[in-house]
Length: 335
Ligand code: EPU
Image 1 (cartoon, helix red, strand yellow):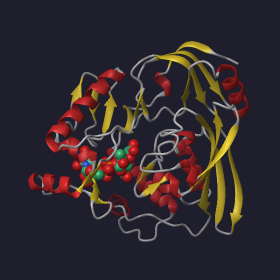
Image 2 (image 1 turned 180 degrees about the vertical axis):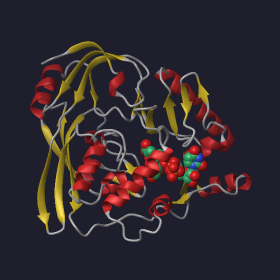
Image 3 (image 1 turned 90 degrees about the vertical axis):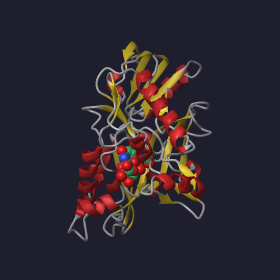
Image 4 (image 1 turned 90 degrees about the horizontal axis):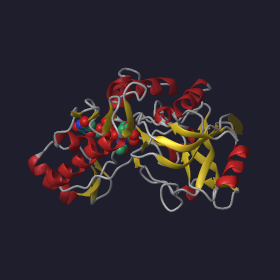
């Protein structure tokens, strides 16, 4: 076991925050992971995967286990379905591109989402009308408390909007090692009704999955900062679900407020719109700021600390509460 000490985690979180782990180990297969967990389970351990959905606000006094388990396998299910499994440490976008290159449909709307395969089920990643749960089949995870592997099917994961059992009651208990998806091999179910996708596709009425992925990539590139250039963790807040009474109160002042109807009583409001109206879009304090094209994304221009980013998040929460009487919940995990 090669354990490193006082290791900077700056390269391992997409916000690019420079905190230190008291000890650190990179594991590349599930057997090695089992051994490490067995040896260290009575000490503090901290699981790091793609580091794309976390804001690190302090040094980590624990053994950071960096999941780098890779590999992709495939199994034909029927004439139009294939079960594709990927190691938790596979880069998500590379995995999506691999599926598209083999003409496996289902993940194309989720192109260019930062992070790794193993983190994707934790928050049920979603974009442009598709969520991970739509093609998810199962995942394998190591139970830290027993040291044994177990499988989770879709129901057992309790997926919700950016939610799963791994963020809820099972938080911290399981380490996902592999995720399996049921994808289509020729009769693809396309999801192109999302306005921005239709606009991007233009005259293409029957797109291929590659054309959809290319449209998604173009939209994301135009709105969302590339973490390799500007540190960020994607949407910092969830889109709030509010009653139609709250919506009506907002509409009295802002007739144009965008919303998605969920049922006869509730709507989802875009947090990015609320934050823009609260005056934060494009604002910057030292190296921490709010992205100029998408107010839902907080950014690190270079040397921001996690606490500087967190301070902006709190200012936003206070102003949105004051102006709209809505409490924004973070989507990113604050560590
Ligand atoms: N808007 C503004 N100002 C802004 C940003 C957005 O007015 O600064 C308005 C837009 O004009 C639009 C609405 O808000 O009317 C929605 O914006 P957008 O389509 O960009 O999507 P979003 O609701 O802000 C969600 C996800 C994204 C996902 C996109 C596309 C959440 C928290 N975020 O953003 O997911 O890519 O939809 O499906 O649900 C992520 O989770 O990290 C993420 C990037």
